[in-house]
Image (cartoon, rainbow, N blue to C red):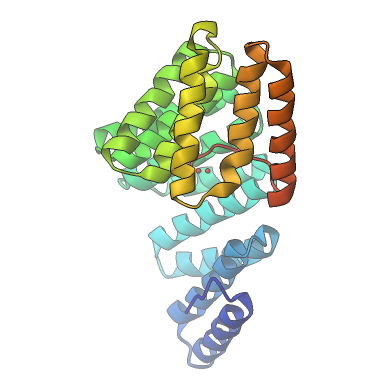
Length: 275
């Protein structure tokens, strides 16, 4: 049992299960309980605490010849190190998992995308684009539309930072179209916000940028995702600045800062990663 909303209870169950499995020499149940301890730490955002459990599970899953679970552990280690800003170690673990993927192209594409996310956070945007493109090629071939859209979103973010607005706009537009086809409102909202940022690079498209941000905010509100309001306000502030409306821009930026402080976070339009 892994009750993610009750860390203490989940840890208690996992330790109890581990004790019983050890006593009864049930190796599969032992390693499952170790892995669940890692998962409980991870989902309570104790990423550093999750790492030792995932590492401990790998040799046991290897002994059991459970390759899928070994890949899972390497991927979880990659995510954990990514979340504590140790990018090089994250990439090293992702690559170990990638080596074992074999014919599991879906998992390979997921890991490639995640390596792209690490490079993007490390500001290695050209490397990020390379990995996103590899993931995109696989997801296109296996017709995994949701993952393909996430790949396009990642590409758009890196192109935006590299000041390649045309490529960014194309990528975000393709992501939005795919999310819309799949009726994924949350991802549509993120793609619309990203389109707003892309359109803002064109002086003759500032109205489109504003409309995209406002449409995104309506969708976020529908879903109760009010913590994205700071990003919308910041984006609208950028547009108002470019329109020469500096008083309104300052007000929008101030509201964004106040909201960010209220929600105790910095906004990142992502793989709702989109990651």
